[in-house]
Length: 115
Image (cartoon, rainbow, N blue to C red; front, side, top):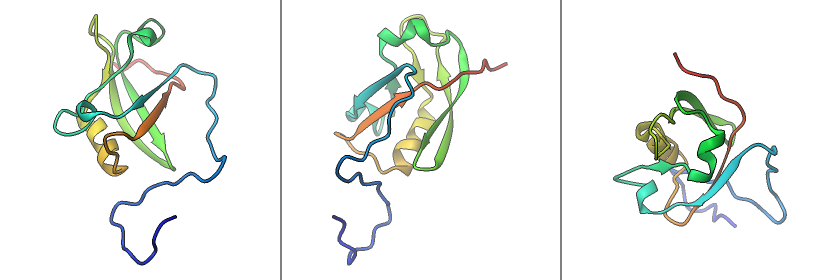
């Protein structure tokens, strides 16, 4: 429960009881955030098991959470590593006040090739 007597400059989303958001059946992965996902590196590498089903090029990607959206670039053109661009990933991390140990589920909805 949140103590309403203390002001918060970084709002958080709390889940209660059995509350959850079902996945769409599309490809996804989950991650518990570590130091490398946060400052100063801000890296989000995509697991290699998903590489064959995701685009092998750079495309516009949109992360959505709690009614907000963050545009970023999916960097899929490197042969061995696939990732989200650091600047936008940093904005997502900072805007949601994410910390080491927090969990994320990234779910692919659709993709459009960037010119």
